[in-house]
Length: 99
Ligand SMILES: [Zn+2]
Image 1 (cartoon, rainbow, N blue to C red):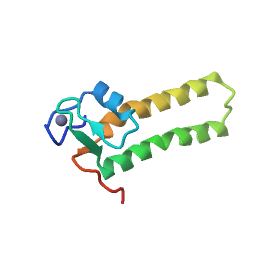
Image 2 (image 1 turned 135 degrees about the vertical axis):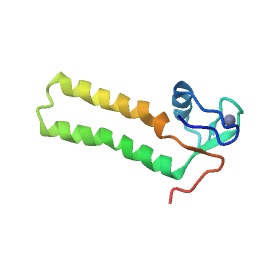
Image 3 (image 1 turned 45 degrees about the vertical axis):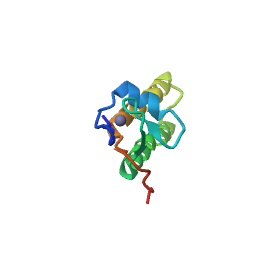
Image 4 (image 1 turned 90 degrees about the horizontal axis):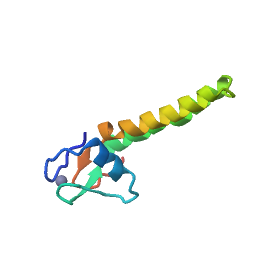
């Protein structure tokens, strides 16, 4: 789970999920209210994991995708990718450029 670089408190899975859905650039720490940013490396890892969703979609097109199982599988992959985000997240006090 991500640890706040300002107060060193670990965020819970639920807090992280709730915070990561906000569209603001910074994420406010639930403990010290300081703004935290995702590190460049964790943003890269996160976008790589999200890339799994279209990849699974593509694979399912190669097979018989009329089966409701594929839809189930797709939703399952999406939910899995979303739920691992807090494990990938690393926080920083400053916004890092991606490159
Ligand atoms: Zn904090």
